[in-house]
Amino acid sequence: MTNNKKLKKKILKIKKDKNKKEDISKLQKETSKMQKKKFKKQYKKDKVKPEDKVSGISRRKRMRFWIFATYIIFGAFIVRIGWIQFVRGDELQSMAYTQQTLDRNINPKRGTIYDATGKTALAVSSTVNTITVNPVNISKKDKEKVADALSKIFELDYEKVLKKVKKRSSIEIIVKKVDKEKADELRVWMQQNDINSGINIDEDTKRYYPYNYLASQVIGFCGSDNQGLDGIEAIYEDELKGEKGKIVKVTDANGGEMEDESENYIPAVDGNDLVLTIDSTIQGIAEKYLKEACIDNVCTDGGNIIIMNPKNGDVLAMAGYPNYNLNSPYEPLEDDMKQIWDSLSQNDKVKNMQAMWRNKAIADTYEPGSTFKLVTSSAALEEGITTTDKAGEFCCTGSITIAGVRMSCWRYYRPHGSQSLRDALMNSCNPVFIGLGQKIGVSKYYDYLEKFGFLRKTGIDLPGEARSIFLKEEKVGPVELRNYCFWSKV
Image (cartoon, rainbow, N blue to C red; front, top):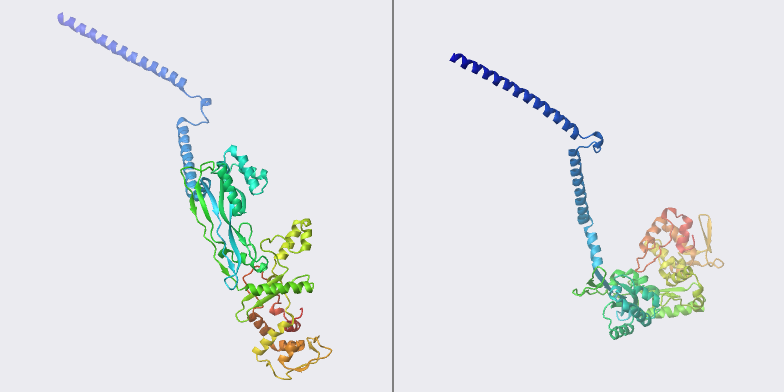
């Protein structure tokens, strides 16, 4: 019995445990189902609706986009910095230097121009002053006082000076080429009024010509900035001008002076002196008699004289009339022109001044006339076609016919008859030189024109030299050659 009871208890216990396991398993299944339902509800609740999406881009894609955009922006900044530093670096550095420094130029003295003796100065540079102001360094209360003083001392328009003094700039030029007396007067006024900054008195130079009119069309003149504008002054500009100096001073952002910074003075280098072949004595004599001849013979187009050394070709004098005063090149010389000068238009004034400055000795072309017979004679002698004094070598009948064209001698009414080359030159007999030219021929004649330098410029050290006028060799026929041989219009 006892064993049976024990067995029954065990069986009941097993059944209970089995039911318990089944309950637990069932409970677990129900719990799992509830959790799934809850998860699905929560998922549905948290799920992003299509209308809430931003352009269909997920959060990860948005993050990638902003990272990429950041790289591009920083890349652009790096490229820009590289462009500024390496490509525009020198330019910007120069601009910064210009903005942060105040430069005042010091003009050098132009070289002196001497005549052939090396003692007579034809053009010299004298010391003058240039007056400038630094408007930012002049106090507001002193601006009107400074403008009034500058306008009175240098005889300038007050309103224009005041406008410059009131400008917001680092430097303004008030007046150039001021004599020492005027500059000293300004220094005294500055001392009396206790003005120590804002007004600058800088050394400058002015071109001066001691002999006024002498060799004016050869020497030329300079502009207000000491730059050669004509003649020798222009041709030898690089040798005469020298190198500018300057006063460099560091300034603040407004262009004002900085007290702790001193001025850096770079001296100017004066130009080289120049010695011409012109002899001032010979030049003066030539100009004197040329003027008398032009006036006595009423030469309305003026005249020219060139005197040369036949041994080396040096130009000892080159005179032209009318000429002009080198110290006042913009003023007319003739009294008749002075009376109507103010009534002329600007174009007419310019034309008259250019005509006055023009060196006709080299800028105009001239027909040599019978003097060219010497060239034909030289070529014929060099080629052995003729000799100097062979009597009866030539016979002037009063004319000669070339290519069917009859050319008369100037003394056709009484022919020269039998003559040598020397006689033909003395008589200036046209037919003799026409005949020589035909024997020389076009090709050989042009060889001698080239050797004599007639087919090119002389290369004289003066501006505006004109070229000679000759037909091209292939276009020259018998008639043209005939005309060249004694020089008549083609």
